[in-house]
Length: 220
Image (cartoon, rainbow, N blue to C red):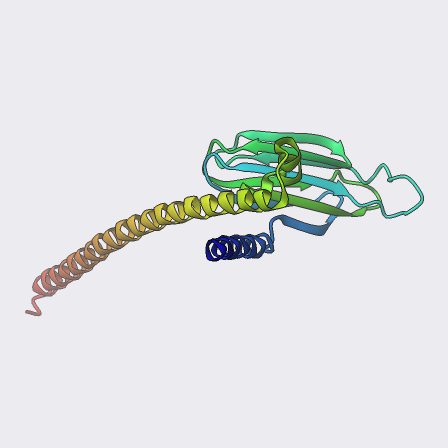
């Protein structure tokens, strides 16, 4: 009985350690960058089908005590791979977006600032999370009234499922790339054959022209 309990404890500890290791990986696409008035900054994220995605953005106040200047406003648009608008906010200093992807491919978030005289430079904080990282785990734990171990196991389960789906997604992309490579190689072979045929035809035409020219001049 004691041996079985130790085995179960070791299994739990191993699972907890693996979950902690996976949780230690960077869970979010977060960055801070400068944006000048009149310019645009675009960020892309490759998202698979039916994946959850959340993001937030904010203009950093250059003054610790004063209000945010009127010139520090941005316009944000998030579009799908086929150009469908998912989120749009005009002249704001902060905001967030959330969606479940119904298209597979590169989603694009573009941020731009209106032109000002004199030009203004602002600092923008942007965070974009997809998949398992997009799930609000503290609220999940509160709603489900689960303890820390169960929460880590749920995280691990979702992470493994996400890795499994990602592997199939990468396999599909690899097959698509292989098909594209085969198609490109086939087209290049036909193009090379066509180029060779054109070169031989031009060379034959030149020889025929020279032969007829010398025959008219009675040089042959």
